[in-house]
Length: 498
Image (cartoon, rainbow, N blue to C red; front, side, top):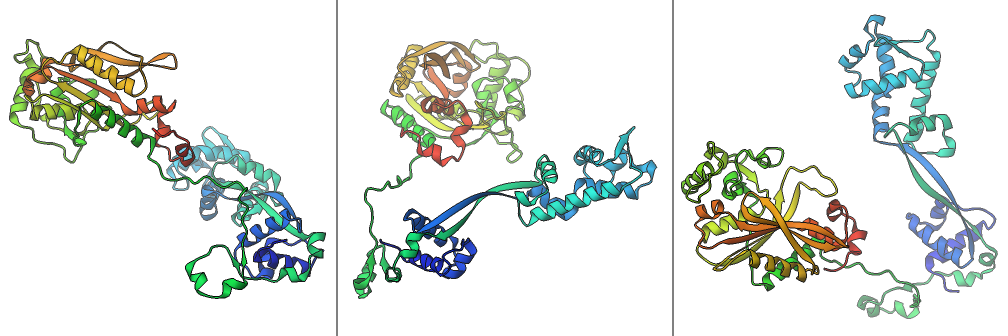
């Protein structure tokens, strides 16, 4: 029977007292080890070879939680209130007096009432009434403190008072449990009968290295055998995050379709982010609850030409034939700094720089909105944006482009339906067939003259935008957007390669 050096050493220790049960500490001492992993590994191997008998007992150990450490240091909440009540005259024992004291916080005061009532105090007409005989209260407080002191060192559940344990388990953060196992080993008959000659420790070679072969020790060493039929762990190598893989997939599709990629800054002005898109300055989306406005930089200069053009467009429609939004346009509002709420700002600024050059461009980037986090919303997410500006650009061209994109993504059933957006006319929403249902994935349309005229665009502009996370949920079959950003390695390993 082949034994490792650790197994031989542990077996020799057990044979010195063959009738005893050995615990972890005694084996560490007898074998001269300082790491319990040696005992656990050798003990398990010897048990599998039926040379020792191993017993495992499950146990629950209770320790102090975060609130328990505070209670030991500052005193339990009920003890602090009790000490304060004893030091106060009857006329100064009201809830208001307690809240104004520095004994407890306002949040703790309400909890304290219930705890004091539970140990014999009364609460009448907004004030505490102490019992005539306080011995039982003091005994209870001392017992609770002693219980926490016991848990401070770690206490087995069997050694703790069951009533106090039930009490503290109902209180958040004071104590917490750890489930553990206690193992003992006893020499088996087969281990006792093994000859002493087989327990001599020898050099065992696990890995052959150049340094080992330079000496002569390996000639008399034992080489560890391997069972090639045993199950081996599957190596978990590095791989792209599903979101990054999806971005690369989308990027390759648009590049394949003849588009160029553009990018832009996270920090923009309200003018480029909203005014340039003919979004009125009193639109709800521009309020603080939807947009992250900045204090640094609070203001960013914009060329006067654009400010003049946007003023004319917003107030009267300029020369587009539109009536505009009316009212008074504020250039100060337009120059406020913010975090971009969409990636359309990148395409608008691109058009402003190259208004007379035909283009097909797209962008994938992060945007920011003050959303409440839930299964379908995040305050920071990604958008996919694209435009076509060239002679003959039209709505049929736009629809065909989007259908081609989604078909390449694996969703051949695509439909569009009328919609409304402030900066496109006509406007439409794009839906794909998924699991037998139509799912809306983005918006599209032709930029209104109120958008393109101040930029000097020579041809109509087809534009679209879609949320990347929603598309990722579709591709990965998720029903909660937050799963995309949870550091769950097991989930990441199981995701398909996109």
